[in-house]
Image (tube, rainbow, N blue to C red; front, side):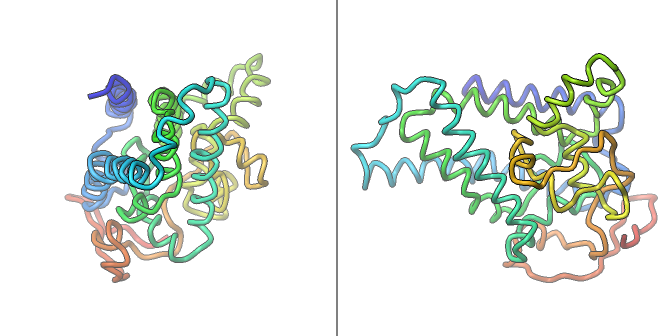
Length: 281
């Protein structure tokens, strides 16, 4: 297994351990009995099946139809590799994410990510299986790897996942920094550059009446700068009171993982042992 993969796993486990110690990683408030299943299946399939298959598929297509371009960019400097990945991977993911909240077909593929009524590292890869198979940024990143930038992709993923995992975790690492007056100018730059718990939690907030919620914005993954640039940013330095999807029924397990193959949409008695059914928002 590549060193970069081990580093990513270590980052994930570190945030998971902090959650486990501070807020109970495996038993979140309002957790549904299907939540863990969705998260395990979607995460495992993305990392073990979908992403490796896309990398292999792009490599096969490249060797078959464009063999002359294999490794064509391998000699470029890191100063050119950085903008290539930020634009063709991270910015493309921003627009894909934004479209997923505007186009009904894509939203049905993405909705599983917002069905959880909690924040956690568990949500990082929680999505419909087909959503990831169609995600343009994975295909573009695989193309850049074919063109010879695999050496850069490993380090880029470590930095990106450190930001994304930290932004999804319910461990609000930015909150104590906001309370340090002399750090305020630094945090002004940080929160407009990368995704933080405050800005990304806003995107997962449940109620539109909550001033900290910005469900139709704050789409950035690594860079929050895309939201600032394209007018979808909301920065409050506060956190939503609750999380999830407002005024929609719970989705079935099949719908969350494989819509439209399982297109049913119905009210579900979402219950965990010893808990009452959760009501619609």
